[in-house]
Length: 151
Image (tube, rainbow, N blue to C red; front, side, top):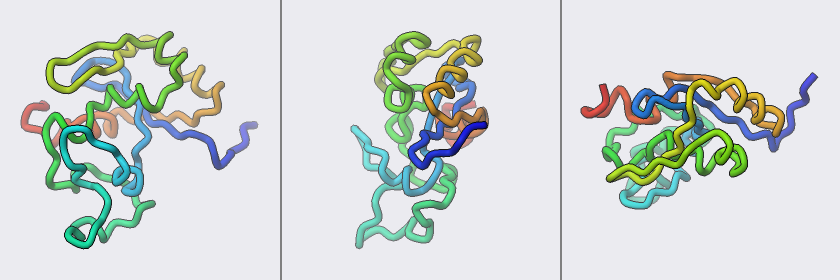
């Protein structure tokens, strides 16, 4: 029997179609989405300030739906879902299961072969992670469904 600890890391993962590999993410609420740091653009779901109350109706713990964010900047926000593994997976597992791949415009991503899924998920669970597969969410987080370049 597994016990739930408040500090348990919850990850969602799936097959990222754009790069044909596994991707991992942990942004599932508006509060988490607001705290995503961006390097080249402002965060359209970003912190609420006095000048912009457009997303104030969403509580921080409300499920995040990227399709409700009207000002998604192609290529800058959100970051490639396949790049999030650099932040959410332990370094040792990234090194064992993935390969860093550069892109021309959007930085590096971690290529985790789909056929390594069972072994990697088992390792994550041994490390105390709660892991759920959701291919649709992973691909929405990667821009599929609202990007004119994704199809």
